[in-house]
Length: 183
Image 1 (cartoon, rainbow, N blue to C red):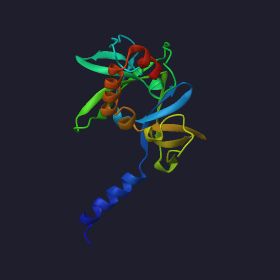
Image 2: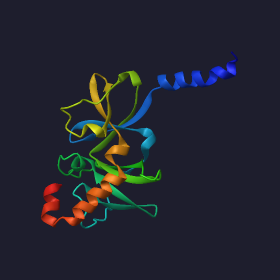
Image 3: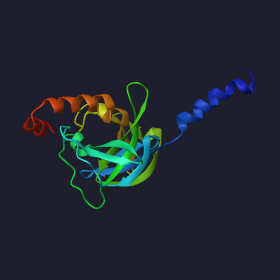
Image 4: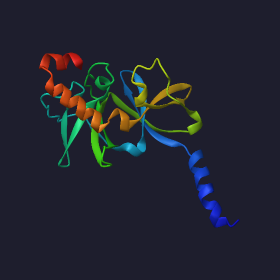
């Protein structure tokens, strides 16, 4: 067997063993992470334009170099109530896949950004079947870092453009009082 034929096998083995980098951030006192490959940038919180008739977890939109980017309050998205804005609050711009294979930028409001960590695949457990404070389908895995768990989010599921759109349409069809109660 020639060496050239073994290259794909060697590359697959190297990819399986490599660590993945994650941006960690705080949300209501809990540590979460998102794969760094999904992150475009981190910006200071501010200059949001409120959009009427949106679900409670959509805080508004921002102008990011001429593009309109919706900003999702991740705490409210998880059903925990709105994030209180502080001087450390920031917006993480994440690129997610749309239904037609297009890419969409969505801003995620977080309490504070912590650091970029490398978490070996061997230190990532599957999501719990029950007991999580957020929907299990939002969780990619549970990373073990310094003896504690970090919830690794599946950005494409948490920020599903199709699901956010459906929720936005449902909120637009509800009377304002019901929309607030649903948020």
